Every structure is written in C-alpha cells, then in structure tokens.
Length: 182
Image (cartoon, rainbow, N blue to C red):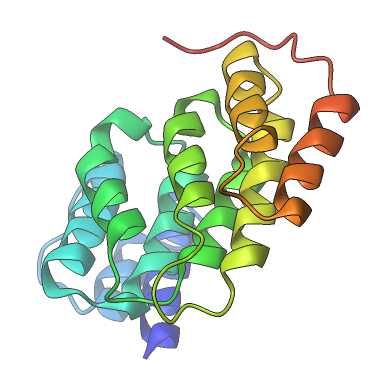
C-alpha cells in the first residue's frame, strides 16, 4: 500500500518541478480540476494530517519525505509530527529518526530528543537503533541546544550504557557552533 502513496509523492514532486504537464498530472492524479503548484505544500500537510487522523501508517514516510523535500516549516506540521512521534499505531519511528538525521534541522531538536527518550516503545524491537539515529541527528544539528540534549542523554542513568556512550561520542565529535533556531 505504501507504494501507492510513494507514487503520489513522486508525481507531486514531478509536477512541482515542472517535469510533467498539468494535463499529465491531472490524468495521473485522477483529478478533475488542478490545484496550483504553490498548493503542493498544503497538499502535503493535508495528506500528513490525513495519515494521522486515519492512522494510516503507509502514508507517513512518503508524505514526510515530501514535506522535507519542500522544506516546509516544522511549525506548520507540529501537531502531525507530535501525533506521529507519540503514536503507537505505526512502526515507522526508526524511519522518522533517520529522516530527522538526514535533515539535521535545529527546529527538530525537541522532537528528536523526545524520540530518543521514547526508544522503549512497548513491543518495539528497533528502539535502540532508533535512539542511536536520534543521537546522531542531535550531533549533526550541531547547535548549543542539541549539545545540551546530548549531555542530558550522556548523563541519564536511566539510559543504557551503550546509548550514554553513543551520546558522549557525539559530544566529542562536534564543535556545536551552529546557531539555534528560536
């Protein structure tokens, strides 16, 4: 089922980048009326919200990818991201952590930190890998605020030794001179 949504996202990106005509887009997206290209960010936000409301895990990664591709401000999708991060209705937490690692945005620090702490989702086997990806994401973000979160993880006695050591390695690997986003 995820392929259907991935195909939708690829089609939206092609249309957004003007690699297919409006007519081709209409035909392939099975629409009667076209929305303006400038509406694609709104479509992406709507689809992500729809995924959360309907608890459709197949939609999460493709539409999050589109949102990252379009560089949509995280404040505009905060509620959806919080629902996805805290949701136990999908198994994409590790993929989300990987996406946060790829974009390395200071705007995601709190979400990445929360996801690192939530690595012990009940019945979730990939929790440690997810937490390590979050730790790497905090290092790549490389700001004073991400350093603060890594220090909290490195000194958290409730964490495993492996994760504390991983946080310490990230602290030693970066200079944390990038600017935080307010």
